[in-house]
Amino acid sequence: MAKWTPRHEAPEPLEGPVVATITGGTILWFLMFLVQLPFYGWFDEHGHTWWVWTCAAGGGLGLIGIWYVRRRDAAIRRSAAASAASSDPSPDAAPGATPEASPGADPVAREDHSPRTEV
Image 1 (cartoon, rainbow, N blue to C red):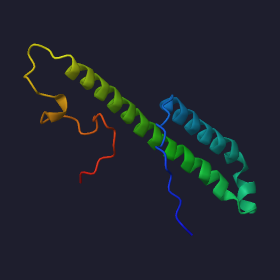
Image 2 (cartoon, rainbow, N blue to C red; image 1 turned 90 degrees about the vertical axis):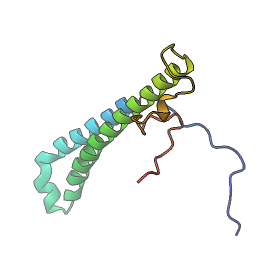
Image 3 (cartoon, helix red, strand yellow; image 1 turned 180 degrees about the horizontal axis):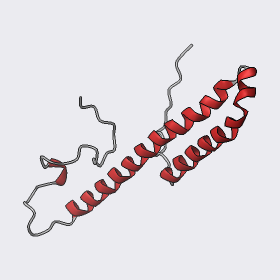
């Protein structure tokens, strides 16, 4: 059987209110955890305590997700600001100097937003 390979370009990823979405999901996970907590005895008797702990894990991972998407959003905004600043050269900027080429440049704030491969 031949492996199927797409013959068209992948669509651009959708950008939306990512921080709000992740925050809302995290709140729901913690809410489900708190709602199930009074019934812990029933879950324990029936061997379903993993339901309670799944909600707790979802809330904890959601906190990590909130931290991640807020940093990503800030990096995208820094990159856009740096791109706008480099396209509008100021009189005190050195000719040919770009913010990405400076020694103290943030490696997260790149225009291509590709994953880092540095170790």
